[in-house]
Image 1 (cartoon, each protein chain N blue to C red):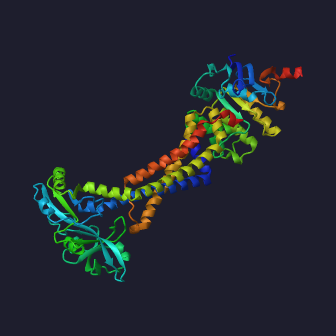
Image 2 (tube, chains in turn purple, green; image 1 turned 180 degrees about the vertical axis):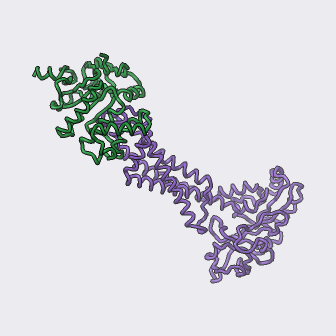
Image 3 (cartoon, one colour; image 1 turned 45 degrees about the horizontal axis):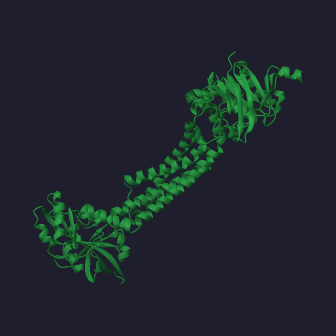
Length: 378
Length: 234
């Protein structure tokens, strides 16, 4: 039956083209939306993932890593006194005013961490285009991302360029590439000392204290102890803070719903186009299918006629759609807010294509299974 | 001789009680091997309903049908379908060929449905079509064939699986006189080989004296006998 189905399908070139275009469009749309969703989640929590650590101490009510406030001094000392705590690292995440060389005022996100990685702390920033994270050690040194040049009002060469952040002059000592936050506002990295100065924090201040533990199993008891002693603080594991941040960005901001809606729209468009094509093809061949039934084709064999058509459209259209999705990402390059085509995006997109063609095929299948042979052959 | 098709006490009505419209009324018929049975009668006399019931495509309101010794009345759909596949071939007035398939493939795919490997099915289909005078049209699609050629392909398709009975519903109505006769000739060759053909037609020119004629009127058989006898009566 597959030969009859596929030859029949390919015989109607215009219809096949419409169906394949519909599936390809819908697949690309869905895969891109899933990729955007994954990219959004990954970008939302990238700071937490990169800074690492077992426990993060922050102000109570913090909804996401970007939404932070300066903590009272002394917490780090008490935390480091715990026998299970190996190290306590300060981090500052702050939104600060920035003035471009042309005088325009904007906002940027400052991320300050301890540039001294001798105690095993991960390198921040990562993805260096010029310079090294260690080059940020020293007063007034920052790293900017080459993707933010236009927003920062800068022109290459960037190294050594002077900027004004929070009315303080700093110098570009390193350049990163491809680092973006979800808001697409420029992100600037600095050593913790410079960050404290720019954020007007005390010399021991931080918006986060990141704890590295000797045994992660100590985490819950340490967190409970700190929260009991300091009700104004919240202690989360890195995974919890990452998840909380992703949840806030994806769900509470409505971005996830918007992406899901567009993906659903793609699915509906695909179902309508493929469904309409298969249905009209099947209707056009009711008499031939009736003939097959009369000479002894089973209902299952007639169903296979529709099944093979739907499978062909799903596989070929889905493949084209997947290629389109990758081409879109490649075409956007570093300008995109981040499309991540992990196995979830690819498999999710393909699963959606098969669901789409399955639903579309089911409509035609019903008409085949209800075929009144006597009527169609009269 | 054992009947290939044996129908007894067939009745069929459209609609639902108490608004039933009777189409067939207590009708019995037997079809034997090597017999060409011509089913005649005015429009609405029940010819199409009768062949649909004989083929197991419709269930009679009452009565039963035995196909090659198996009672198909009351069988489930899968069993009737299997019985049809084993024993029946169909030729339709409108051919019902797949436009996307070549003449060979239109025949071969039906054989393949019966489990014949496609290469062997194509080989047998080629032989059959050559025998039917379509040797130079094997790879042509139905749209590239004349009406007579298309009906030959349809007959080859019906005969390829070697059915015991062929039901032909007005197979010559779309054909000119000479082509209609050649189509009938093909069917008669198979009848002489032992296949039974049940032919629905209005065209009396296609009937020969040895054919069996069953005339239906208002859902009843009003005459069942040889064409020769019918001529004498007239």
